[in-house]
Image 1 (cartoon, rainbow, N blue to C red):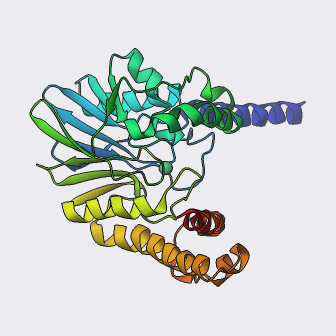
Image 2 (cartoon, helix red, strand yellow; image 1 turned 180 degrees about the vertical axis):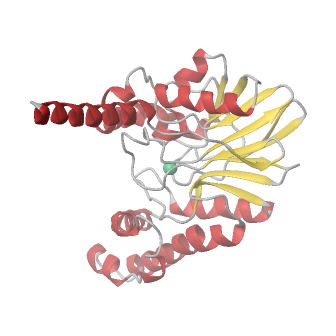
Length: 311
Ligand SMILES: [Zn+2]
C-alpha cells in the first residue's frame, strides 16, 4: 500500500513536471543592446516544442511614439509570449512589426500582432516567397509543435517596402530598411538604426552557428547584401542567429564561408566537375567549428553548386 502511494506520488511529480514544462515553454527575454534598443537571442539548434520554433533572434526598438518589433516569431502563441516580453520592457504599444525574411520564425506570428493593431512591414521582393511557403512552413511546424501551433494563420504584411533603401521614422527614431537582392530568402531586409549604429541583419548574418542555404536562397546576392553591411560599418550587429556581434565575427562566420563555397563551386562548374566530386573536394574544415555544420554543410554545398550551374 505504502509502495503504491509512493509510486502514485512519483507519478504525480513526473506529470507535474511535464505539465510545467509544457506550460512554461520558451522564455522570451529582451536584452539591452543600446539606448532603447533590445534583442532576444534565440536558441541556435533546431526547432523544438520547447523553444516553440523560436530558434532565431528578434529585435525591439522603443520610441516615444510606440514600439517596433523586428520579426514576430513562429506561431500565434509564441507571438503572445513575445508580446509579454515586450511589456516587461515598455508600456508602449507595438506599432510596427518588421519582418526581415521569409522563414517561419520571422513572420508566422504576424496574425497575433495584427490582432493587437500593429502595422506589418516587409520587403515586396519576398511577397511570392511568403505566399508560396507560408502554409508548408506552418504544416512542418505543426509536425514539431503539435497543438502549440494552434491559432497560427500565415498573415501577409500590410505595408510593402519596394526600394533598395527606404527610410521610415517613428517617434523621431530613424529606421533604414535595405534590400540587397535577397540572401537566405528573397525578402531578406536589413534594419539599420543610423543614430544608434545598430544593425538588425536578419538572416544575412549568422554567427556561432552555420548558415543555411535554402532552395530559395541566393548566395550571390547574399554576398552583395553583406557588402551593404560592410559599407554601413555597424557598431553592433544583432544577427539572425547567434549572439550579438560585430563586423569581424560576421565576416568570419558568414562571409568567409559563403565566399569560399561560391569560389569553389564556381571553379567546379567551370571545370565540369560533377556535383558529388565538387562537394567532396571542398575544404569545410575551417567552418566545422560552427554549430549545426555537420547537418547543414552538405545541403549548402549542393545548393550552391546548383545555383552556380544556373549562372
Ligand atoms: Zn533563420
